[in-house]
Image 1 (tube, helix red, strand yellow):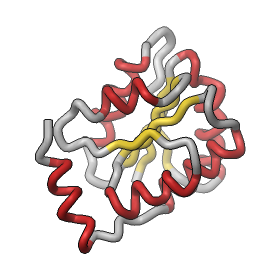
Image 2 (cartoon, helix red, strand yellow):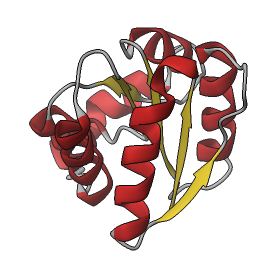
Image 3 (cartoon, one colour):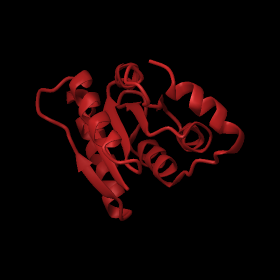
Image 4 (tube, one colour):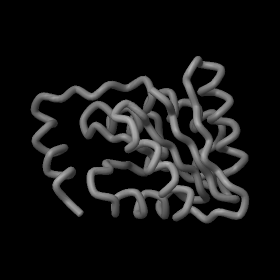
Length: 141
């Protein structure tokens, strides 16, 4: 698994914190951030790399997390969640099989952001009864 990460200008500093944490934890990380790119372009770059491999996961950081969430969910088959706490990050993997999360640098601080990343990348999809909803989500768009 590779964690694809990206940020716009507002999320760059927090992205670097999350990226450093993931690398220190032994995860493969691919940073698709580009100087001057807005959250739409950054999110689409992350989605492209996440969908290129069934085991990849994605994280996008901007000011509030909402813009990248709206962008990602426009892509057929992309299940994404905007999260601002550790439990939601873990549960969106466990129950929704989310492949991508978004977060806002003006909402969460560095410690919470590291814990969100940990919960998301270490979480595993439970399957079972949750698959019905995941199938429903994947048919949308």
